[in-house]
Length: 315
Image (cartoon, rainbow, N blue to C red):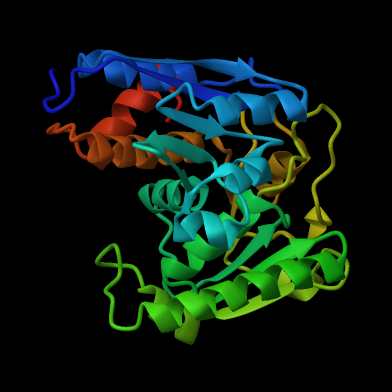
C-alpha cells in the first residue's frame, strides 16, 4: 500500500537508556515500509545525559520517541509543548517541525486506547495509577478524559504523590478555563473542561491507600518495577480481587510478581505490549498529520500492522 503526500526521506529514533530491547524500530519500520514512505527508524541508546542533550540540540531528526530517563529533559528542550506533555511533566515524542521542536506525550492516550480495545470502559470507573513520573501522570490524565469517575495517583511517599497530583490539577484547571466550550477530542470522551469539573482527582501512598486499591476497578502499574527479575509488586498483591482489571506497562520480562498475583486472584491482566503499540499508533497519526501523509489505514489498521511486526501472534 502506498501513502500519498510525502516523499522526503526522514530519520526517526527512539532515545533512552537502555533501548536495545525496544520493539519500536520493528513496528515503525514495518508501517513506513508498508506505506512505501522513505522514513527510517533506529535506536539512539545514550547513557550520558549531557550527550543526550547534545543530540536533542542538534535536531538532526524528524522525530524521536523518548523513553527512560529522558522524558523531562526532552520537555525542557521543546519550543512548543502540547497539553499532553505539559500535564504529564515529560514528553515521549519530539518532532522537529520547521524551526520548532514540538513536544507531545502519547503514553496516556495510547494506554487508554489499547485498554478500550481490550474491553475496558472507563466511564464511571475508579482507576488507580501506580507511580508519580510522566508516564503515570499521562495515564492519570487519559483515564480521566476517558470518563473515569475517580483517578488515584499512588506512590511510595504520599507527599510526592500529593505534589504531583496537585500540580497536575492546577495545570488542568488553567487549561479548562482557557478551553471552555471546546469539544472532546473523541466522541466517547470528555473535554478538558468537563474532565476538570466531573472527575475526582485523588492521591495516596501504597501503605495509606489500601482500601482504595481494593476498591479500584482498574489498576495500572506505571512504575519501572518488573524490569528486573525479582522485582516485587508496588503494593501488597493480597489487595487484588476477582473482577479487577490490572495492567503493568512493563513488557517482555517474563511473568513478574504483579502479573502472577493478578492472575491467581482472578483479575484480568495485560502487560504493556498493547500500550506500546497504542502510543505508537497515536505517534504515527500525529506525524502523518504534520507531514501531510494520507493513508486509508485508520487507528485499527495501523494497530494491527504494528502489533504484528512487534508482537507477532501476541496481541
